[in-house]
Length: 109
Length: 112
Image (cartoon, rainbow over all chains, first blue to last red; front, side, top):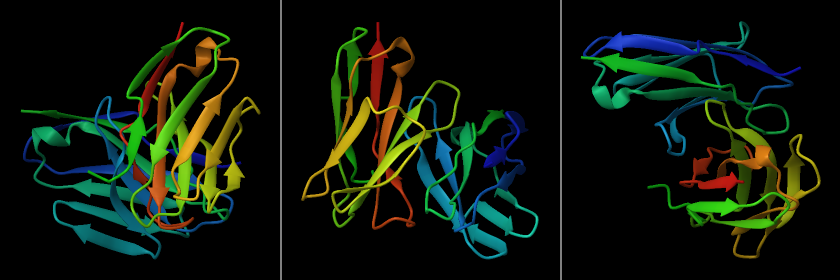
């Protein structure tokens, strides 16, 4: 079957760094997406990885290891506005996104 | 702003009624995907439309149906509403299947 595993909730301090891990099992693989979702709002696109390695985009970086079925999202210089859920979504062989429940990130002052 | 719009924003219906939700995709995007998201859960894939044809369907009963128009806007229809249909309904458009999906603001459906 297809499966996504992320921590349910994480807490971090403003200004710090946090890493959100994601392991996945899918039928085929066509890349992995990370989305941010604030409470009551729609998901917004953060990053896309299709090859192994690190993709950096400002304060956010995303890493992929296809052989391990593993990805992480790294958030640096945390700000209060980063409090949100972070959704890891690999794309399967049918080009459909597979979603987990996401990780709720709480930022404390 | 993603350029994807949805209407209505909120909707309240009673059990057994029917509902139509609408989505306008981002300019140039020919693929629309629909998702249902219950509180505290990730989005659940309902179906996807590519150039007016259904291009994949999730594990939803036939009372969930859809349509895509020549301008690539789309509708989601749900018949015989049940209490468990209460959720946030999201549509996402992409340039084509496999590309990054950009979400609209969603429609919050409450079934009483």
